[in-house]
Image (cartoon, rainbow, N blue to C red; front, top):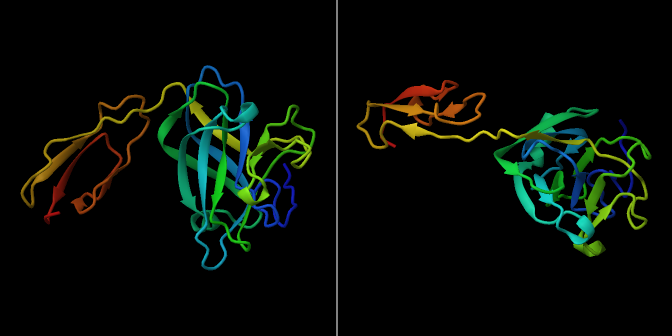
Length: 232
C-alpha cells in the first residue's frame, strides 16, 4: 500500500497543479451481486483549510462514457471535507461511506470520489497499490475543465502513465434492504403515544430510529412507542 504524490498534491486525490475533479476505480465483474450499498476508502490524508467549503461526493457511475469511461452518476452521497478531516488521523485511516439507498448496477461500473470546491490549501490523498501490481489498470480520473475535461485511465499516456488500483472498495449485495415504515397515527394530542413500526422491512439487519422531540429520542428496536410532550 503506497501513496503517490505529484502535481502539487496527490496523484490519487487532490493536486493543485491539475485540479482533477474525480478519482474512481473500475469494476468489471461482480456477479452475483446487484447493488452497491456503500464502500470503504483508505485515505492517506484529509485536511480542510480555514474557511474552505470543500466537500467530497462518493459516487457510483455506469460505464456509458466515451470508450467505456464513467458515464451517468447512478447514485452519490456528499460529505464535507471538515467531517472527513476530523475522521482521518495523521498517517491515514479507513473510512466507510453508506449510501442512503442501495444503488443498482447492471453493467460494469465505477466507484469513487468527486472533489467539490477544493481550495489550494486543502488536501485529500487515497492509498493505492504499487505501479504494475494491477494488470490491467483500474484507476481513472476526471480532469478539470481548465485542463480539457474528460475521463482518463491512469495508464493513459496523457495521464500518469502508471497501472494501479486505488483503495476504493465498494460494498455489494444481492439482497438490498428495503425500508417499510408505519406509524399508528400521524396527528395526536400532546402527551399521546405513537407507535412506529419497521418490522415489514425486507433484508434489514438493524434499526436506527431518531425521534425529534419524542421520548425516547432514539431506538434500535423494530417497533417503538414514542411519547410527545409538546406540539410540533
